[in-house]
Image (cartoon, rainbow over the protein chains, first blue to last red):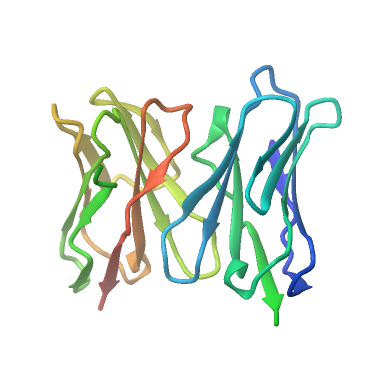
Length: 108
Length: 112
């Protein structure tokens, strides 16, 4: 059983809506997470790191880490067509193990 | 600061040949990881090096090998190429293995 599970999608939202991407994980002592965005044909790009319980905001992006419920999420507010990409989450303790990610499409 | 660089950008080889891919990490980063990515899948972990020592190895055959040099740059070698080795090969660097990774642009390998 994988220790980190990511909702595989695909996820489609209209422009201007909130996109919600989630990962769940098995219990671990140290819990930091990284979110990457990958456009088709390009390499992954780090967009958010979250190291502690709670929310971290960066522009239209908010990462949420809930250690009690063992999930981490990425919210994209006011989604734009340029946000259409595959989003990957990775925990710090096993950050080489990427799943297929969640493919997000933002429709104009 | 320059990001992670990889060379070459594209490469075409024939079955049975070998290939060497190169990666230069971000200055100050001591950890380098290699990934293979085929269409529709996430990056598949091949190797991780930290301080010039192998820290991890993914589920790849022995035809795949790598090393890290004193300046922390790295090479990935693949021998006896198969058609199935055609993929985007990604290199990522980080300060240490548990830190966030920064990816290079990748090398697109085509095996004919």
